[in-house]
Image 1 (tube, rainbow, N blue to C red):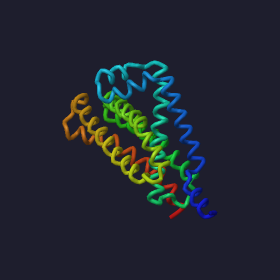
Image 2: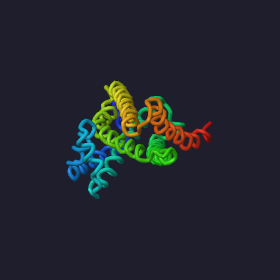
Image 3: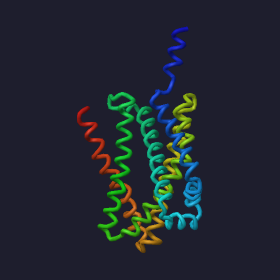
Image 4: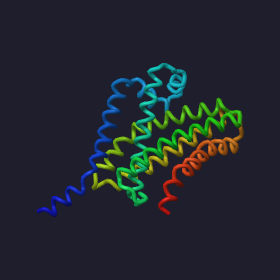
Length: 229
């Protein structure tokens, strides 16, 4: 009987992770209540060009606040996906789950900041500030929509132990498809607004996406691995 209870308790989700999910549920409820029209516009902007134009022109204080909350929600989803992937691959560098999750939070949020900082720098260096700004705006719209739509699956992959692996592989597939269309959109944007050839458009968008990732990996991964190697 005691062994059965022990097995059941070991199957529970860490309490701190449950608190994080509860916080995310409260956060999305808060966003939905206060910025419902903005959420609708973000979702439609991925499919309707008129909504995309309206979103880009809207510089109100309410929109800025909504963008901050939605970007934070997206990054929390990415953090949990990265965390769960690392656990499944047994890549925790010997750290406790809680401490490793904090490392994931710092890495994801730091990567996000460095990525867009580098992208703005690249845009100024190549004198394509307007194109880079348009690309970042459209990319963040896709990021926010992705964060909203993927959240139910993120919950299931953590709390539904029987289907966790299947759901998580589904998340990975959806993430790859999302990134593919995100980059394709960047290439099309480069051709339409940048007036540059197809090949240069691909190279420029790859530079915008790959270079920040390489820098983030160098900055965040090496300090973690070197003491453990």
